[in-house]
Length: 88
Length: 88
Image (cartoon, rainbow over all chains, first blue to last red; front, side):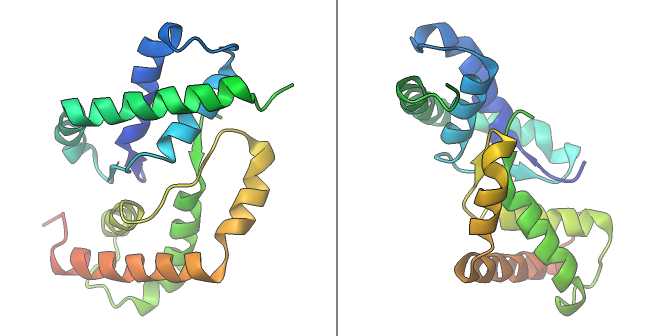
């Protein structure tokens, strides 16, 4: 393990759960990854450099405010990607 | 490829180049990863979701201001880790 941004797995999981509610025109893997990248670029990072701190840090990330922020950024990113997908 | 934060490779490369100038008490892999994580948590993300945009985005990251920011955050992180290493 070099370093890991815990926010990646949190956003990825929320995206999987919310996918059907986002009403995206296309739900292919590329569109999902585009939403993930756009949302992650709008959210704070939470890098860890050891597995030791990982579980505690991850639990901290699952608080209401963070999840609300993640959902907001995923919804905004989904609208952007739906409106202008990166593939033709 | 799911998503990739280009800032990770930029910070990692600058850290490798600067390692000997940072005068850290310990330069083990854990201390290097700790510096990387602390610096990345203080820098903006640059996630990409396809290899297509990766080269262009990465070139944009190598501008003077970004490299100056990276060097500043690496120096601050090195001082924190040197002062209080996460291993005994």
